[in-house]
Amino acid sequence: MFLFKHAEKSIELIDRFLNIIDQGSIIFKEGVRSYLFGNRENFINNLQTLSTLETDADLIKRQIENILYTQSLMPQLRGDILKLLEELDNIIDLAKTNLYQFDVEVPFIPTELNQDLVKLTELSVSAIESVIPAARAYFRDPESIKEKLHRVYLYEKEADKLADAIKRKVFHDMPNLKLSEKFHLRYFTLHIEILSDAAEKTADVLSIMAIKRNV
Image (tube, rainbow, N blue to C red):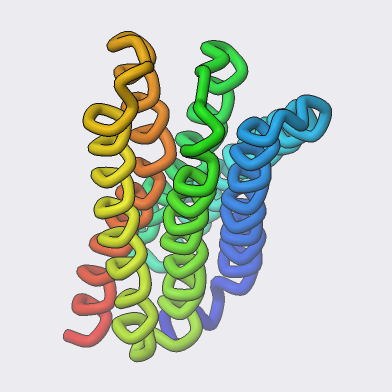
């Protein structure tokens, strides 16, 4: 903690930043559910909220970067922290961009896929929700990072398996769909699944950072 004793302001901002990423993942989950079950009003509200959160995350990220550079705080760790912030920011960027694609492209999703896609969304969001406490632990309790990260990898693997199962169902068990519709469904399955990949990438960065802290 010695390296962080003069960095309270940065850590406070990082906590706020992490809260926004966490909130964004929840709104993404609600947005997908709203779209699948035809709740247009809620879906639009989710889009607007997620857009606001993404903007807030960018602003706080720039504040943190400015403090780290101008006040020469944590110089030994600055590069790693900035890399972590970039990966976390990518999560909420993807969440906003991918939810907006539902609004732009208006994919036709058969109701028999709703529960699978809801579950896929929950798994991807769980991966994000699991990486947040690991990121907090880096600044508070770095020795606990490893035990927190295993959940990220678990949820990411489960999301991959379910996404493959959904795509297999679409291409093998739904003959009434046009090929173009099948491609569209594969594309939107990927939009949801990719958030767990982003969480996994963040977990990889944290794993390396934790090793460096303990060397």
